[in-house]
Image 1: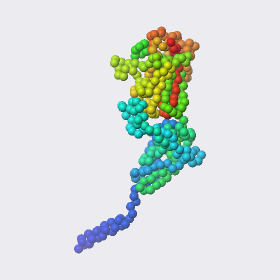
Image 2: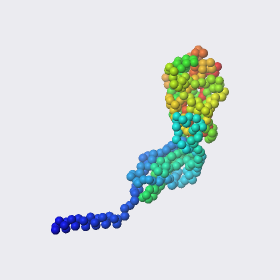
Image 3: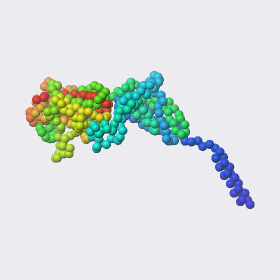
Image 4: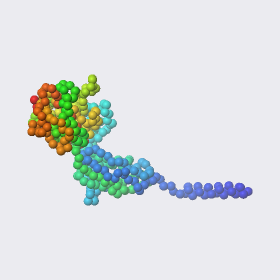
Length: 362
Protein backbone atom coordinates (compact mmCIF):
# COMPACT_ATOMS: atom_id res chain seq x y z
CA UNK A 1 0.00 0.00 0.00
CA UNK A 2 2.85 2.36 0.86
CA UNK A 3 4.33 1.67 -2.59
CA UNK A 4 1.04 2.62 -4.27
CA UNK A 5 0.90 5.91 -2.33
CA UNK A 6 4.52 6.56 -3.24
CA UNK A 7 3.90 6.23 -6.99
CA UNK A 8 0.63 8.18 -6.71
CA UNK A 9 2.45 11.07 -5.02
CA UNK A 10 5.09 11.15 -7.78
CA UNK A 11 2.39 11.15 -10.46
CA UNK A 12 0.60 14.06 -8.77
CA UNK A 13 3.86 16.04 -8.59
CA UNK A 14 4.64 15.45 -12.26
CA UNK A 15 1.08 16.40 -13.23
CA UNK A 16 1.34 19.62 -11.21
CA UNK A 17 4.66 20.57 -12.84
CA UNK A 18 3.34 19.89 -16.34
CA UNK A 19 0.19 21.88 -15.62
CA UNK A 20 2.23 24.84 -14.32
CA UNK A 21 4.62 24.68 -17.31
CA UNK A 22 1.75 24.49 -19.77
CA UNK A 23 0.21 27.63 -18.32
CA UNK A 24 3.47 29.60 -18.39
CA UNK A 25 4.11 31.73 -21.50
CA UNK A 26 7.43 30.87 -23.25
CA UNK A 27 9.13 33.84 -24.87
CA UNK A 28 9.78 33.50 -28.61
CA UNK A 29 13.42 34.03 -29.66
CA UNK A 30 16.17 36.10 -28.10
CA UNK A 31 17.54 39.55 -28.86
CA UNK A 32 20.75 40.35 -27.01
CA UNK A 33 21.37 43.88 -25.72
CA UNK A 34 25.08 43.30 -26.30
CA UNK A 35 25.12 43.11 -30.10
CA UNK A 36 28.20 44.87 -31.42
CA UNK A 37 30.78 45.07 -34.22
CA UNK A 38 34.09 43.28 -33.73
CA UNK A 39 35.74 46.57 -34.72
CA UNK A 40 33.59 49.64 -34.08
CA UNK A 41 35.55 51.99 -36.34
CA UNK A 42 35.36 51.80 -40.15
CA UNK A 43 37.50 53.92 -42.48
CA UNK A 44 36.23 54.45 -46.02
CA UNK A 45 38.51 55.83 -48.73
CA UNK A 46 36.23 58.19 -50.58
CA UNK A 47 35.04 56.74 -53.88
CA UNK A 48 36.19 53.18 -53.23
CA UNK A 49 34.18 50.02 -52.69
CA UNK A 50 34.73 48.63 -49.19
CA UNK A 51 32.93 46.80 -46.39
CA UNK A 52 33.13 46.52 -42.61
CA UNK A 53 33.04 43.49 -40.37
CA UNK A 54 29.59 41.99 -39.74
CA UNK A 55 27.74 42.20 -36.43
CA UNK A 56 28.52 39.91 -33.49
CA UNK A 57 24.99 38.91 -32.50
CA UNK A 58 25.74 37.39 -29.06
CA UNK A 59 23.41 34.45 -29.64
CA UNK A 60 20.46 36.49 -30.89
CA UNK A 61 17.86 34.57 -32.87
CA UNK A 62 18.07 34.60 -36.64
CA UNK A 63 16.94 35.68 -39.13
CA UNK A 64 17.62 39.30 -38.24
CA UNK A 65 16.90 42.53 -40.07
CA UNK A 66 19.43 45.31 -39.67
CA UNK A 67 19.33 48.93 -40.87
CA UNK A 68 20.84 52.27 -39.97
CA UNK A 69 18.39 54.79 -38.59
CA UNK A 70 20.50 57.91 -37.95
CA UNK A 71 23.97 59.19 -38.80
CA UNK A 72 25.61 62.10 -36.98
CA UNK A 73 28.58 64.27 -37.87
CA UNK A 74 31.38 65.00 -35.41
CA UNK A 75 29.44 67.89 -33.84
CA UNK A 76 26.47 65.60 -33.16
CA UNK A 77 24.27 67.04 -35.89
CA UNK A 78 21.99 64.56 -37.69
CA UNK A 79 23.06 64.20 -41.33
CA UNK A 80 20.67 61.47 -42.48
CA UNK A 81 19.79 63.30 -45.70
CA UNK A 82 23.45 63.37 -46.70
CA UNK A 83 23.76 59.59 -46.48
CA UNK A 84 20.32 58.68 -47.82
CA UNK A 85 20.76 60.62 -51.07
CA UNK A 86 21.30 58.26 -54.02
CA UNK A 87 23.87 58.32 -56.81
CA UNK A 88 24.37 56.23 -59.98
CA UNK A 89 26.52 53.21 -59.13
CA UNK A 90 27.53 50.28 -61.33
CA UNK A 91 26.64 46.90 -59.81
CA UNK A 92 26.98 43.27 -60.87
CA UNK A 93 23.93 41.32 -62.05
CA UNK A 94 25.80 38.02 -62.41
CA UNK A 95 29.02 36.45 -61.15
CA UNK A 96 32.37 37.46 -62.63
CA UNK A 97 34.29 34.67 -64.38
CA UNK A 98 37.97 35.50 -64.91
CA UNK A 99 38.32 32.82 -67.59
CA UNK A 100 35.47 33.92 -69.84
CA UNK A 101 34.81 37.55 -68.94
CA UNK A 102 37.84 38.91 -70.76
CA UNK A 103 36.26 41.55 -72.98
CA UNK A 104 34.61 44.86 -72.27
CA UNK A 105 31.34 43.61 -73.75
CA UNK A 106 31.34 40.39 -71.70
CA UNK A 107 31.87 42.26 -68.45
CA UNK A 108 29.44 45.13 -69.05
CA UNK A 109 26.78 42.57 -70.02
CA UNK A 110 26.86 41.47 -66.37
CA UNK A 111 26.59 44.98 -65.00
CA UNK A 112 24.00 47.69 -64.70
CA UNK A 113 23.83 51.20 -63.31
CA UNK A 114 21.44 51.75 -60.43
CA UNK A 115 20.73 54.50 -57.93
CA UNK A 116 22.14 53.71 -54.48
CA UNK A 117 22.94 55.62 -51.31
CA UNK A 118 26.71 55.82 -50.80
CA UNK A 119 26.62 53.64 -47.68
CA UNK A 120 24.23 50.76 -47.06
CA UNK A 121 23.84 48.18 -44.30
CA UNK A 122 23.44 44.52 -45.20
CA UNK A 123 20.04 43.59 -43.76
CA UNK A 124 20.98 40.06 -42.76
CA UNK A 125 24.35 40.53 -41.03
CA UNK A 126 24.85 44.27 -40.47
CA UNK A 127 27.91 44.63 -42.69
CA UNK A 128 28.35 48.28 -43.69
CA UNK A 129 29.01 48.50 -47.41
CA UNK A 130 30.45 51.55 -49.18
CA UNK A 131 30.35 52.14 -52.93
CA UNK A 132 31.67 54.67 -55.45
CA UNK A 133 28.93 57.09 -54.38
CA UNK A 134 31.04 57.97 -51.32
CA UNK A 135 32.99 60.20 -53.72
CA UNK A 136 30.17 62.68 -53.05
CA UNK A 137 30.47 62.65 -49.25
CA UNK A 138 32.36 65.23 -47.20
CA UNK A 139 35.47 64.01 -45.43
CA UNK A 140 35.06 63.61 -41.69
CA UNK A 141 34.07 61.50 -38.71
CA UNK A 142 30.52 60.17 -38.36
CA UNK A 143 28.63 57.91 -35.94
CA UNK A 144 25.76 55.59 -36.79
CA UNK A 145 22.67 54.36 -34.91
CA UNK A 146 21.74 50.82 -35.90
CA UNK A 147 18.34 49.12 -35.55
CA UNK A 148 18.15 45.34 -35.15
CA UNK A 149 14.89 43.36 -35.42
CA UNK A 150 14.15 39.64 -35.02
CA UNK A 151 11.27 37.51 -33.69
CA UNK A 152 12.03 38.69 -30.16
CA UNK A 153 11.51 42.35 -30.95
CA UNK A 154 13.36 45.49 -32.05
CA UNK A 155 16.09 47.52 -30.47
CA UNK A 156 18.12 50.56 -31.49
CA UNK A 157 21.83 50.47 -30.71
CA UNK A 158 22.98 54.10 -30.48
CA UNK A 159 26.25 55.17 -32.13
CA UNK A 160 27.23 51.55 -32.64
CA UNK A 161 29.74 52.35 -35.39
CA UNK A 162 32.13 55.24 -35.99
CA UNK A 163 32.78 55.92 -39.67
CA UNK A 164 35.67 57.92 -41.09
CA UNK A 165 35.42 59.23 -44.66
CA UNK A 166 39.03 59.78 -45.68
CA UNK A 167 40.84 60.89 -48.80
CA UNK A 168 42.88 58.36 -50.74
CA UNK A 169 44.34 57.80 -54.14
CA UNK A 170 41.77 56.91 -56.77
CA UNK A 171 44.53 55.18 -58.71
CA UNK A 172 47.56 53.64 -57.04
CA UNK A 173 50.88 53.67 -58.81
CA UNK A 174 54.03 53.71 -56.66
CA UNK A 175 54.69 52.76 -53.89
CA UNK A 176 51.26 51.24 -53.08
CA UNK A 177 51.02 48.92 -56.09
CA UNK A 178 54.72 48.42 -56.78
CA UNK A 179 57.78 50.22 -58.07
CA UNK A 180 58.84 51.52 -61.44
CA UNK A 181 61.71 49.55 -62.91
CA UNK A 182 64.08 50.67 -65.66
CA UNK A 183 66.48 48.22 -67.24
CA UNK A 184 68.14 47.23 -70.49
CA UNK A 185 67.67 44.23 -72.76
CA UNK A 186 69.96 42.96 -75.47
CA UNK A 187 68.33 44.48 -78.54
CA UNK A 188 65.49 42.37 -79.94
CA UNK A 189 65.71 39.75 -77.20
CA UNK A 190 64.36 38.97 -73.73
CA UNK A 191 67.90 38.78 -72.32
CA UNK A 192 68.64 41.27 -69.58
CA UNK A 193 71.65 43.53 -70.05
CA UNK A 194 71.55 45.40 -66.74
CA UNK A 195 69.10 46.92 -64.26
CA UNK A 196 69.25 50.72 -64.23
CA UNK A 197 67.00 51.14 -61.18
CA UNK A 198 64.35 48.99 -59.52
CA UNK A 199 62.63 50.22 -56.39
CA UNK A 200 60.98 53.18 -54.67
CA UNK A 201 61.78 56.72 -55.82
CA UNK A 202 63.06 55.68 -59.22
CA UNK A 203 65.40 58.55 -60.23
CA UNK A 204 64.78 58.03 -63.94
CA UNK A 205 60.95 58.18 -63.85
CA UNK A 206 59.07 61.43 -63.42
CA UNK A 207 55.30 60.94 -63.63
CA UNK A 208 51.98 62.64 -62.98
CA UNK A 209 48.49 61.18 -62.82
CA UNK A 210 45.32 63.20 -63.47
CA UNK A 211 41.70 62.20 -62.92
CA UNK A 212 39.99 64.67 -65.24
CA UNK A 213 36.37 63.44 -65.37
CA UNK A 214 33.89 61.22 -63.50
CA UNK A 215 32.91 59.44 -66.72
CA UNK A 216 33.59 57.55 -68.91
CA UNK A 217 36.04 54.98 -67.57
CA UNK A 218 39.11 55.69 -69.71
CA UNK A 219 42.81 55.31 -68.96
CA UNK A 220 45.54 56.82 -71.14
CA UNK A 221 49.30 56.68 -70.69
CA UNK A 222 51.93 58.76 -72.43
CA UNK A 223 55.64 57.85 -72.29
CA UNK A 224 58.16 60.51 -73.28
CA UNK A 225 61.91 61.12 -73.20
CA UNK A 226 63.74 63.67 -71.04
CA UNK A 227 62.72 66.45 -73.44
CA UNK A 228 59.06 65.44 -73.28
CA UNK A 229 59.11 64.03 -76.80
CA UNK A 230 56.53 61.22 -76.82
CA UNK A 231 57.39 57.74 -78.00
CA UNK A 232 54.87 56.62 -80.65
CA UNK A 233 53.01 53.41 -79.67
CA UNK A 234 51.30 53.18 -83.08
CA UNK A 235 54.71 52.78 -84.76
CA UNK A 236 56.03 50.26 -82.28
CA UNK A 237 58.14 52.75 -80.32
CA UNK A 238 56.42 51.40 -77.20
CA UNK A 239 56.25 47.64 -77.61
CA UNK A 240 55.51 44.51 -75.63
CA UNK A 241 58.36 43.13 -73.55
CA UNK A 242 59.32 39.53 -74.42
CA UNK A 243 59.09 36.95 -71.65
CA UNK A 244 62.31 35.16 -70.80
CA UNK A 245 63.03 31.45 -71.12
CA UNK A 246 62.80 28.91 -73.93
CA UNK A 247 59.44 29.07 -75.72
CA UNK A 248 57.78 30.93 -72.83
CA UNK A 249 54.02 30.90 -72.45
CA UNK A 250 52.88 33.62 -72.64
CA UNK A 251 55.57 34.91 -75.00
CA UNK A 252 55.22 38.47 -73.64
CA UNK A 253 54.97 39.87 -70.14
CA UNK A 254 51.60 41.37 -69.21
CA UNK A 255 50.63 44.88 -70.26
CA UNK A 256 47.57 47.10 -70.65
CA UNK A 257 46.54 45.48 -73.92
CA UNK A 258 46.28 42.09 -72.20
CA UNK A 259 43.83 43.48 -69.64
CA UNK A 260 41.63 45.21 -72.24
CA UNK A 261 42.25 43.47 -75.58
CA UNK A 262 39.12 44.78 -77.30
CA UNK A 263 39.32 48.43 -76.16
CA UNK A 264 43.07 49.07 -76.31
CA UNK A 265 44.13 51.74 -78.81
CA UNK A 266 47.65 52.88 -79.70
CA UNK A 267 47.93 56.38 -81.20
CA UNK A 268 50.94 58.46 -82.17
CA UNK A 269 51.47 59.65 -78.59
CA UNK A 270 49.42 57.60 -76.11
CA UNK A 271 48.09 54.17 -75.29
CA UNK A 272 44.44 54.23 -74.22
CA UNK A 273 41.72 51.84 -73.15
CA UNK A 274 38.21 51.70 -71.76
CA UNK A 275 37.97 49.78 -68.51
CA UNK A 276 34.63 48.24 -67.50
CA UNK A 277 34.99 47.92 -63.73
CA UNK A 278 36.92 48.85 -60.62
CA UNK A 279 39.23 47.84 -59.24
CA UNK A 280 40.98 47.60 -62.58
CA UNK A 281 42.61 45.23 -63.19
CA UNK A 282 40.32 43.11 -61.04
CA UNK A 283 42.80 40.22 -61.08
CA UNK A 284 46.49 40.00 -61.84
CA UNK A 285 47.64 38.10 -64.91
CA UNK A 286 50.92 37.46 -63.11
CA UNK A 287 53.73 39.50 -61.54
CA UNK A 288 51.34 41.69 -59.57
CA UNK A 289 49.69 44.72 -61.13
CA UNK A 290 52.64 45.68 -63.31
CA UNK A 291 52.61 46.63 -67.00
CA UNK A 292 55.76 45.69 -68.93
CA UNK A 293 57.06 47.49 -72.01
CA UNK A 294 60.21 48.01 -74.04
CA UNK A 295 61.41 50.81 -76.29
CA UNK A 296 63.31 49.22 -79.18
CA UNK A 297 66.85 50.45 -79.62
CA UNK A 298 66.08 52.12 -82.96
CA UNK A 299 63.98 54.72 -81.13
CA UNK A 300 65.99 55.46 -77.99
CA UNK A 301 69.38 56.67 -76.82
CA UNK A 302 70.14 55.63 -73.24
CA UNK A 303 72.41 57.42 -70.77
CA UNK A 304 75.12 55.41 -69.09
CA UNK A 305 75.15 55.93 -65.32
CA UNK A 306 76.86 54.60 -62.23
CA UNK A 307 74.80 52.40 -59.94
CA UNK A 308 72.20 53.89 -57.60
CA UNK A 309 72.07 51.70 -54.52
CA UNK A 310 68.93 53.56 -53.39
CA UNK A 311 67.21 56.91 -53.77
CA UNK A 312 65.69 57.51 -50.34
CA UNK A 313 65.83 61.28 -50.89
CA UNK A 314 63.68 60.97 -54.02
CA UNK A 315 66.11 62.85 -56.24
CA UNK A 316 65.48 62.94 -59.99
CA UNK A 317 68.29 62.18 -62.40
CA UNK A 318 69.49 65.37 -64.11
CA UNK A 319 71.31 64.08 -67.19
CA UNK A 320 74.85 65.16 -68.04
CA UNK A 321 74.96 67.49 -65.03
CA UNK A 322 74.24 64.60 -62.65
CA UNK A 323 77.11 63.02 -60.71
CA UNK A 324 75.84 59.60 -61.88
CA UNK A 325 76.20 60.48 -65.55
CA UNK A 326 78.92 58.49 -67.33
CA UNK A 327 78.00 59.09 -70.96
CA UNK A 328 75.77 57.34 -73.46
CA UNK A 329 75.47 53.61 -74.07
CA UNK A 330 76.37 52.52 -77.57
CA UNK A 331 73.38 52.90 -79.84
CA UNK A 332 71.69 49.90 -81.51
CA UNK A 333 72.73 47.47 -78.78
CA UNK A 334 70.10 47.85 -76.08
CA UNK A 335 66.33 48.07 -75.80
CA UNK A 336 65.00 50.11 -72.92
CA UNK A 337 62.70 48.09 -70.60
CA UNK A 338 60.09 49.80 -68.42
CA UNK A 339 57.80 48.39 -65.74
CA UNK A 340 54.74 50.49 -64.78
CA UNK A 341 52.77 49.61 -61.61
CA UNK A 342 49.11 50.70 -61.67
CA UNK A 343 45.66 49.84 -60.37
CA UNK A 344 42.50 51.95 -60.55
CA UNK A 345 40.04 51.95 -57.62
CA UNK A 346 37.59 54.75 -58.46
CA UNK A 347 35.66 55.04 -61.76
CA UNK A 348 36.56 57.94 -64.01
CA UNK A 349 38.86 59.24 -66.75
CA UNK A 350 42.59 59.18 -66.06
CA UNK A 351 45.78 60.27 -67.78
CA UNK A 352 49.21 59.01 -66.73
CA UNK A 353 52.18 60.97 -68.08
CA UNK A 354 55.68 59.46 -67.74
CA UNK A 355 59.05 61.03 -68.57
CA UNK A 356 62.11 58.78 -68.77
CA UNK A 357 64.89 61.11 -67.68
CA UNK A 358 67.77 58.95 -68.89
CA UNK A 359 66.49 58.62 -72.48
CA UNK A 360 66.50 60.68 -75.65
CA UNK A 361 64.11 59.91 -78.49
CA UNK A 362 65.90 58.92 -81.72
